[in-house]
Image (cartoon, rainbow, N blue to C red; front, side, top):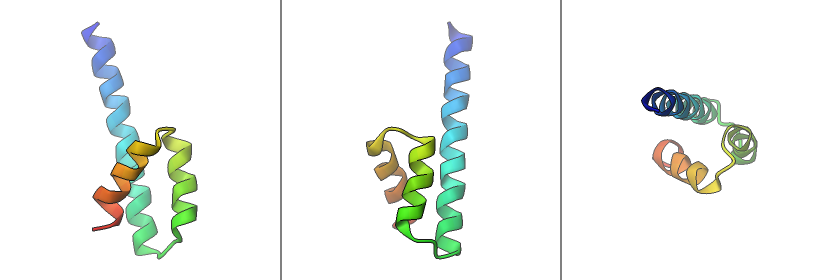
Length: 60
């Protein structure tokens, strides 16, 4: 059970790191928000989580 939890936690951290890199790339290259949202929706199905990531990394 602990191994399964650790695996899921690692998977979630990896997805968040990928999203963070996409957001940072979008900011640096001045990509439009719609393009960024399309990419994030491919990684995360949870809109609340996408909103949280945008607030954390994009709107700073």
